[in-house]
Image (tube, rainbow, N blue to C red; front, side, top):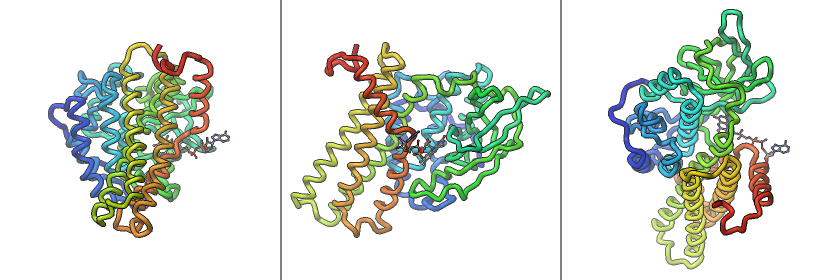
Length: 382
Ligand SMILES: Cc1cc2nc3c(=O)[nH]c(=O)nc-3n(C[C@H](O)[C@H](O)[C@H](O)COP(=O)(O)OP(=O)(O)OC[C@H]3O[C@@H](n4cnc5c(N)ncnc54)[C@H](O)[C@@H]3O)c2cc1C
């Protein structure tokens, strides 16, 4: 569990994004150290705490930077991209932290919001655990007014390190209820054997069993079904896309460093590949810019925001999938040997690109285009 401490004044959104950019090279230099099964970038989260980044997604009136507010989506996506550029596992866990604080801000009662905001400012790490297998989490009301948990989540990133995971659980009538578990006192069982992955080892995305734990109603967040409220649920995909693009930027930067070190910059084929890589990375940046602009603009309805987010995540997945083989051809077999970072960057990005329902996401964007026959030049602007 982390050592908790209070930080001084929160940074502005622009300074929070700049702090993430400053941290990126340190994260990259340290990433190999936690790239082991069961590893977790503990020290890296101390750096994020010290930089005020754990409180940054909170509203300013609760000692945050307002990074989660629609008007600051640009800065939020920049921060996520820079952290992802440093270490995708750190980016994955930080994205979950920002997501949890967004859900808490949106659905928490005032006294809950105040309590959990104070926890984030004190350095508690949040996250969202929703994915489950056949033995998913159930929430049974007790005569005492408390609730008993049973069942497990899979892919619980930051398992054993998150002290305030937000999880979803099925009520007896099937309602899908969010709750925030005080995991430093109600300690679930972590099964590290679940996490023997291709990449993203350091995200510690274990199976987590909650059977037998009890919580009070003050830990329940929002009403049943709120978790899937749109555009927040699908629209949030722009956050993981930002982290993924950060991974592609790291591949780009390291490829160029490698070629320069070998004095292989005059070769026309390498130049051509760097040109293609430049188009891909810049395209991803443009997509994120457009997503942030749409989020900050008054007007777009939930359906439009979701369809656009589905395009953004599909486009960035495709961009990342094209960046990887181009970079492999640039650096060749010797570049794929440790201690060069490419084999880890490739494993991490390849695994992290596997996000829920990729086919359905692209199909939804296609359905939107078919249902709204505005000309292409103003498909996203009414
Ligand atoms: C590193 C990492 C960390 C993660 N951390 C968390 C976390 O902290 N919290 C959390 O809740 N989750 C987490 N996840 C889980 C993540 O959110 C997704 O749920 C998971 O990655 C999706 O798994 P999948 O690719 O096996 O999904 P699937 O949905 O099974 O997709 C696999 C393929 O099947 C297709 N498909 C989907 N449904 C159907 C169908 N009905 N019929 C036919 N084909 C279908 C998809 O389009 C895709 O092509 C994490 C995942 C990773 C990789």
